[in-house]
Image 1 (cartoon, rainbow, N blue to C red):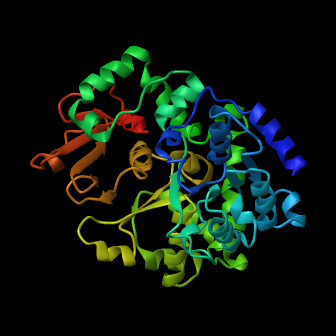
Image 2 (tube, rainbow, N blue to C red):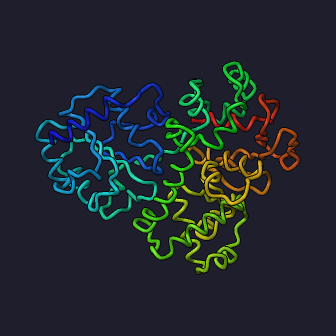
Image 3 (cartoon, rainbow, N blue to C red):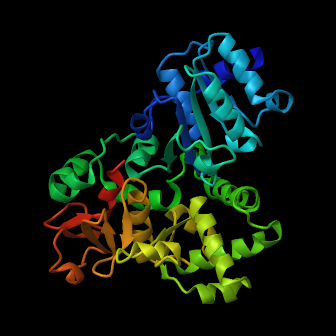
Length: 397
């Protein structure tokens, strides 16, 4: 226990709290059991350490540990929790839970045995926390953490701080919001850089190795996490990699499962399972039509990469502007809103707004007679009427 407390002190002492992600205020930290899922390198560990540092630390009451550490090769999680609780522990932060084989059963036992002990878990996006070996669905409050928004990138990397805006306010008062943004910076000056190398927090460690690090993250997901947690056979990892490359070089695409099946040499059903696995792993986003939810049991209507940075690493082609515009838009709205493929514009948001994506000359003929129809236009700085700058959708969180 002493070694864990010593490491905890060192980690918190070296944790920077100048910029705190917006999800910090969205989480109800008073819940007894919280899970935070997210892709590798997205900032889950930093978030937990920042919470401890900001709220003051009594190491006997609040403790952060990573379950992939050597301590847990010699001690069980239940044994550790029992000792921590006996010493007056009240708040336990468990990182990398997916690397501890029996985590779900032991977390359930800890939850049931120590009713005044609060637990925060973090793990990979592919981890099915609520449907693991032990049923935690009635106990756990889940949160999903994504990469940096354009707003957070400006704050973290460029030291330009702007408060987030709600989607409703952006669409109804976009001119006022964009005026304010342009008073503080020239957003288009930084937007391309964000699309290339700005989504993952390790951008702070330098652009030079950014794409190499991102490639390592992608390889780890494909080679380790998908076989371990999503049932992908190790012998088929190369086929999953091939599928991701095909998607990256062709997205956004309306889906022909039979063609994808033939391309990588697996069955139609296997392709569908691979797509769902990569969606869970936050490598791609699957979009369905707003016409019928029954389709969600079948093939998606359109596929996008999860973010534009992945495309810079994986795609065999130089992506066109239209691809990156739509990928960015879906990425920035996917977590906080319901995004569906639309046949009227490009997307329907929350079943209410219809959005068409394009360049600065986009006229929006498809949504001319659509109520709550808007254009998200690239390469413009200011909003006018129903035309909102594309970059502004990067300020929603």
